[in-house]
Image: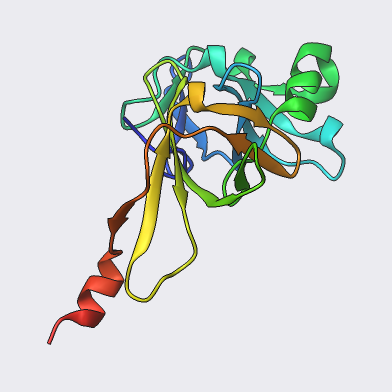
Length: 174
């Protein structure tokens, strides 16, 4: 399953003209259903002028390129109220703080895995550094009860796993 940051590095290909039309500037997630909602190709000076592709137009999210059937899937957000509402409601979740319902900080979202249809499978949360170890927590969408404009609220079933980052592992080698 691909990570959102890996999807940002993939080309968007229009099959009707047989060309790549560029790479996404952003990928937004719908906070109500934990689903990729919109591929932002270019961000406009105001949101209405952003060039966007609805996630439904993407053939599959788990291949080497994001493929659309035709250039007709690419729109200015201002031309479609549904796309504009998805643009306004979608969230950039990377580096978003995550708290429990009691107010305990779990860390920040540092990765999101999606399935072939663009559904979120896991949110990866990292705590701040504790020496050479950065605990990681993987949350299922069912454990995230609120995704807001500033932070997320989660009720995790598991405890963080202590996994050193690769650069830390290299630094600790003799």
